[in-house]
Length: 99
Image (cartoon, rainbow, N blue to C red; front, side, top):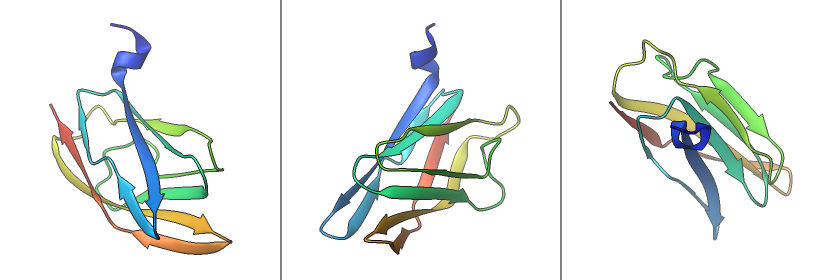
């Protein structure tokens, strides 16, 4: 299996001040986030399924973290912040991690 098959890719999309995130990943070893237009930040509540609980990036920058080996399948709450004209816009989606 190639490295790309082990990555879950999550794109942060901003439409009319609404923030959308792809919420579901399967059998990924690592999750990667990006947002095309704005600087962004992702922070997981506890327990976090990721090795790094907090990630941030510039517009069009991809950042990621490995999924913890002991992370149980399930739903994980986190906060996505997108900085539009320097002002933070937040949403609190869930990430669903399957086996």
